[in-house]
Length: 128
Image 1 (cartoon, rainbow, N blue to C red):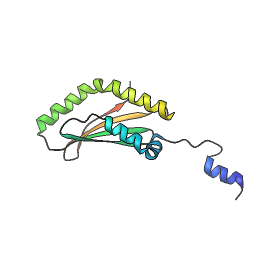
Image 2: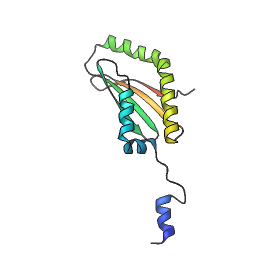
Image 3: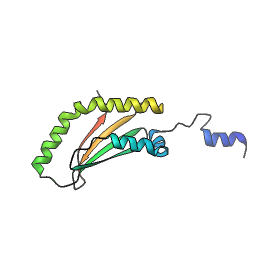
Image 4: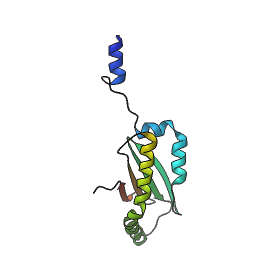
């Protein structure tokens, strides 16, 4: 196989292969651990962070079932508190972009009830 053919296969027509946030996270378990440790998890919930492409998701899940009226009140509270979460998410995104050199990173918060149904989601940065 010629050198030119190998370069085309590995380099995509001379373009540099760019790592995604997901790639960087997979290669840096300490970074993922630091992010996980800095997530504030409300009592009675678990949390985890995951990466896909240039996005990250923070997923919260209730450990125990709660009644429908309490769940509805909490979902409404999460919606109202999205403004409170916004500065922290914007800073986290800016820090990740600076550290990785990747622009356009997005983050999403997901809330799941104990049975595994998603009850609330919100993406940052918010679409204007």
